Image (cartoon, rainbow, N blue to C red; front, side, top):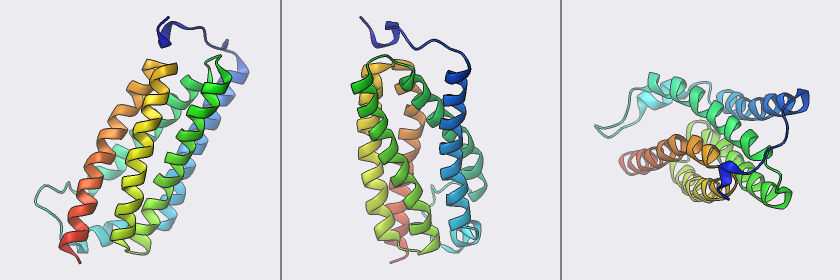
Length: 167
């Protein structure tokens, strides 16, 4: 049976509370990152950047949407009945979110572009595993993470270029 055709937990207050919790965790990571990089816009503008680097104003709107899809994807997986596989998939989701959280203070706060690159490469790998694990449980959840995966791949290349240009 296809992953998306398998039964899910019934809706109701508990399900909506879980969605709210996943949204709170995702946007909590965003808020902590923002606190760790209050001067991110200034830092970004002060860096030597490749010609293909996006304008600084693009990052906020993109991340706002991505954090929502990250949360909804986790919630869709959480609703699946295969508890051992769900727990494993959500463990990978948690690790990638922690790596996501670590990147901003490394890059903008500490200005450790090489360490930030190591972190984002680990994030990219962990996120790819998460997408694979999610796909086995819920294809829509995996699909929701694909823009995030593509953005992190792009950000990895940008981080590498910034590190090279500002070494």
